[in-house]
Amino acid sequence: MVTNNKENTMGQKVAFIGLGVMGYPMAGHLQSSGYQVCVYNRTTSKAEQWVKTFSGDMAQSPAKAAEDAELVFVCVGNDDDLKSVVLGDDGALTGMRPGTVLVDHTTASANVAKELHQIANERQVGFLDAPVSGGQAGAENGALTVMVGGESSVFDKAEPAMEAYSRCCKLLGPAGTGQMAKMMNQICIAGVVQGLAEALNFGQQAGLDCEAVIEVIGQGAAQSWQMQNRYQTMLKGEYDFGFAVDWMRKDLDIALQQARELGVTLPLTALVDQFYADVQKMGGNRWDTSSLLARL
Image (tube, rainbow, N blue to C red; front, side, top):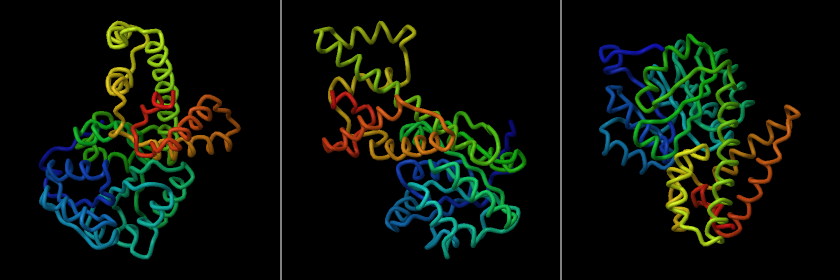
């Protein structure tokens, strides 16, 4: 692992494009760690609020934000958003100099990651696909997990900055590997949340004290992050927080499409994706992913 010292990071100019529930605190951690951060967000008021909070700078386009930056970070919604802010007429690559690095934290397809990697390389710009896991709380607490695809020499340049908002940041292979790893992450989460929802529903129907049961089984092989962090809110029917069902369905669609390309079957993932579609029909588009219990 390469660690940077304060002397090297202090004052280094970076850009952060996309100030959603993840990007907003991530950019804040960079600014607080001594980087000079210039942000861009499509909703200008969000960028203005970020500047007021963290005392960084803002730009009117991704290209302007990236002009003097050694590192440019992107965290937007999907493939189309990503292409727009990176490859558009005012996209980040337009403003980036040879030798700088573009780090994409969007959860997107492996295909778009490979495409952007090739285009960036043609312009002598390094590229990493680096989706994150840990949700809004992880971003706010600087405790995200970052799954990275790209070259090791490029990763070495960006890793010290990513440590500002992560507790685990690992290079896993060439371009596209980070996105593939994130697909594995979401596949695992989907199955675990459905299992937890079914167990809680079973316990409630059986008249058990589910809190007491979870205190016991949470000490054994059934333990999971979802169980420890979500069972209480699930039992209370509270879902107005966390990672939204709409975003989970977007991520699962990416995984299922990739599986088809690989000739791999994901029967449980496909089933849980349909369960999330049911939650959407219930009006739960912005509910936390643990809302699978509400469907039951």
